[in-house]
Amino acid sequence: MSTALVTGATGQDGGYLVERLLAEGHEVHGLVRREDLGGRLPDGLVVHELDLGAPDDDLAGLVEHVAPHELYNLGGVSSVARSWAEPVLTARVSGTAALVLLEAARRVGERRGREVRFLQAASAEIFGEPPTAPQDEDTPVRPVSPYGAAKALAHHAVGIARSRGQYATSVVLYNHESPRRPTTFVTRKITSTVAAIAAGRADRLVLGNLDARRDWGWAPDYVDAMVRAVRHDTPDDYVVATGEAHTVRDFVAAAFARAGIEDWEPLVEVDPALLRPADPSLLVGDATRARTRLGWAPTTTFEGLVAAMVDAERFEN
Image (spheres, rainbow, N blue to C red):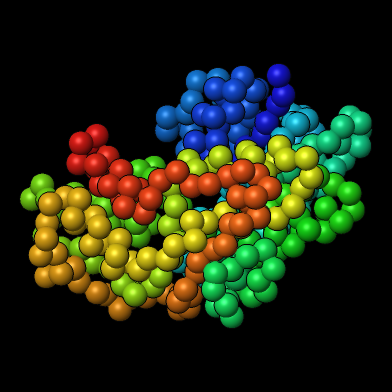
């Protein structure tokens, strides 16, 4: 039985990952912020109350204590909008904390005489306004938000660690959704509000840029890519995406269609206050490397993930 350490263990991806690792029989340790301790935590998870904004010695000390075989760094500020409001905090928890964890993993590996396989959850936001589409692992890293800049720092740190012989992999995750997304995310805001409108509990959906295009996938599929990547013979960078771009308007239309509402446009209002200072117009990924080297492929269509999210709101809540 191997040991895994997961940061962001209570987030969407962290939750799915912890459940998978526990089901596989691993000893799983998770970083959990104090404010998340009251939530539902999987049975068997070894909880460590610690934030990625903690002092470096505390983070490194935890890695030393757990001495994991696999370290998944999924934690950090998860909202681009929040990163504009708190750029320094974002740089710390989504950027420099990864450097601390990488170095701690390297030291544990040296002392134990074995690899500590490190996986960084990067984001398509590191590409900013990419010059070409689709994007792959060779696309220039040019972020246009504090969130993207922090993720880019961690992504580059992985590459540097790998050049020194450390097992460090970065998965560049495009947008991926599930019913576990918080309502602060536009996708969950859409599905929860559409369900409320269908039930007569709301009368309109207020959004920002309906023309923003994203490559949306199913979160459990992306967690599968993480596990495949960290267990591959050699570390590398991998774009994880479906290769299909859809607009926010497409997402809204699919959600209303699932709820049985055809004439949805009068129910949607655009609020300029919800527009981002910078919003990449087209992010769509080329996951050829993940498909060919890891044998990974998405299992759920765009329509399928929207339907699953709407159904969860309507029938499970």
